[in-house]
Length: 120
Image (cartoon, rainbow, N blue to C red):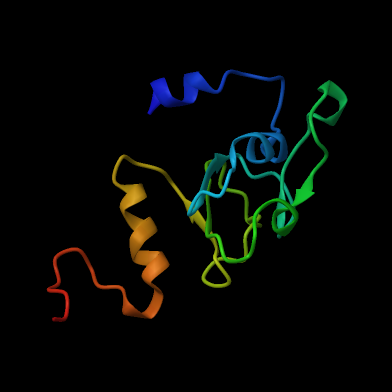
């Protein structure tokens, strides 16, 4: 995971809108790991003064039919995404197993725990 994060470099702050705008190109989902200091429905950014974008509405950068999964690493009470519906999901805590949640959440009501047998 650290090697992947190092590929994206470092800026003096959070600038998720610029990262999404630069890297999102018709992918089937967006995964963000952040300190999530923002308001619901917005990608956080405090880098506008450093050449980055301002805080931006999620739906302005990612179509509503594309799932967005955000991991809140700081434990703030309010998350950027209204979790549990409309292809916008918030999670707290991150381990190497956390990404296994993505397909379960995306299947919604049809999801089964990994140890359960899938219907035939």
